[in-house]
Image 1 (tube, rainbow, N blue to C red):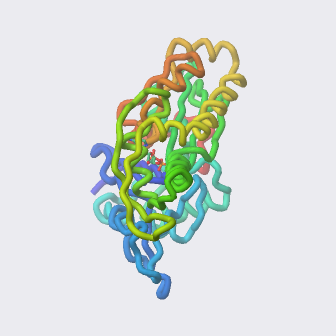
Image 2 (image 1 turned 90 degrees about the vertical axis):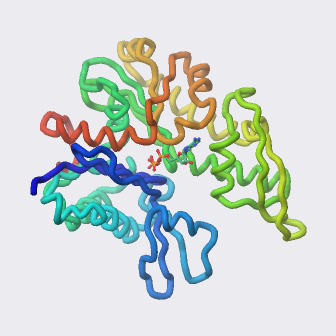
Image 3 (image 1 turned 90 degrees about the horizontal axis):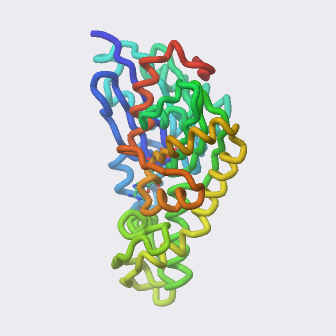
Length: 333
Ligand SMILES: Nc1ncnc2c1ncn2[C@@H]1O[C@H](COP(=O)(O)OP(=O)(O)OP(=O)(O)O)[C@@H](O)[C@H]1O
């Protein structure tokens, strides 16, 4: 029995766990179903996600990390413990070191509590790290060199934008505009234009299958179902890429603006490096059709989507654990 280091991407939308030597061993949605009457956890992860929008009154399905902050700490703790215990850390993996990447804006009290939850689940030493740094490392950027690297990590709750050099963040911004808000914009658009109520899962489906954020970038259509707001009855209608582009226009403009303001605050030598190396997109939002083209046009630098953008943070935790002793400014080490 020997200790293997564990990296955890505790995300708003998904939790990924990386075990040294084995790669990503767990990838589940950050969702928990609870029985309101007994306060008992009924399901966690994928099983709970399948219940979203489909539960009777006594069961609530939580996303405990909504909006990139910990909305419900007890539920977050229960979820984290459930996932770590699933790996059987206490038995097979004796006392591993655990590096957790959690939302950027959490309070020090929350940081402590996350640390404690991981300790109780069997961790020997727990490290917390900032998401954009780990995402950049996971995307293969050489952030320990004295040169500028820019990463835009578009997750479920937050978009983290950072310029890194010599292993640390030089300029950054974290905004609450990301995948969840895009879903909400699509849902509101369908409600406004067609008087049709759709669920969150349907609007996420539209985003993934036919949306684009680059004008004219995609020309597809999709049949969607929901509840007619006037008749109250189920109804089907067809939506097109171009109208979803309109629906998402203002939201993506917020991300473009945040990226511009980070670049404006970046020292010129590092800006020059970014022209050479380009901006790397990570997180599930990097898969939003046309986002790379749009950012490249607006920022006038090359923009590249990382390979497996949703895995970058988890992969980055693995690389960081290998180099833990030479990391500057690590939090709660
Ligand atoms: N093909 C796709 N097109 C557009 N969006 C996508 C696609 N695939 C996934 N997403 C979105 O990516 C988001 C989840 O990304 P990710 O798993 O990186 O977030 P997270 O790390 O859990 O969140 P955060 O970084 O805010 O804590 C969801 O909003 C999801 O809808």
